[in-house]
Image 1: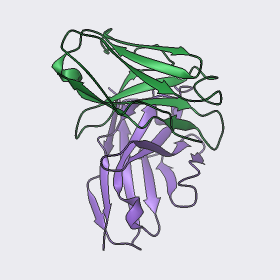
Image 2: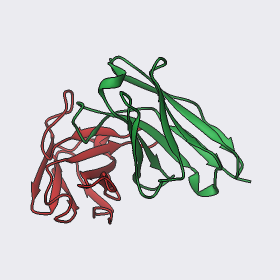
Image 3: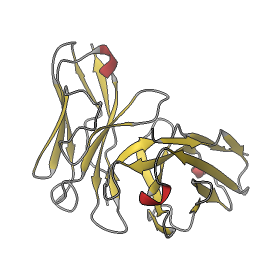
Length: 112
Length: 120
């Protein structure tokens, strides 16, 4: 099972919005609504931002939103702030015992 | 408050054995699976495997099947990841994780990570 496809990098200015895409297949993203997104700052553990495509855990800012269309999930960050600069990973349930999860390769967000 | 606290940095030689730990607190240990994820420095995340503490049933990624063993110590509410013979390619940061709710497939809680370096 291949990794989910994410852009290597995206950038935006403070206050702008950016969207990070995550493309899988009909065997993972396209079938299951178990897509999650994680934010990772350098030297830190990842943090859950979005689960089940569009749900935010308690405490996560509503500037982060998730969606899905077909085999592609997206994370949108609105009102960009300097502290949003980080790596972002998507993850999907893989649909089988062998491939419980499939991760994206990560996207580096630069806030200009 | 849910907490996952992992054991410290490890530096090992190829062929050595190792067990790293993840001590939990703040919730009922047997109600949630515990997973292990690996991140090679500068790279992305991979899932290693998970264990259901109530019956110790395990599921491993094909990439790690046969290479590692995941176990739990229920009285100590601790999960372990172990290797019997380390290779240089086992080098990485290992995180233990817990889901948001028991049927969830997302990793809501993360340990701080254990850096494992295998080098001769």
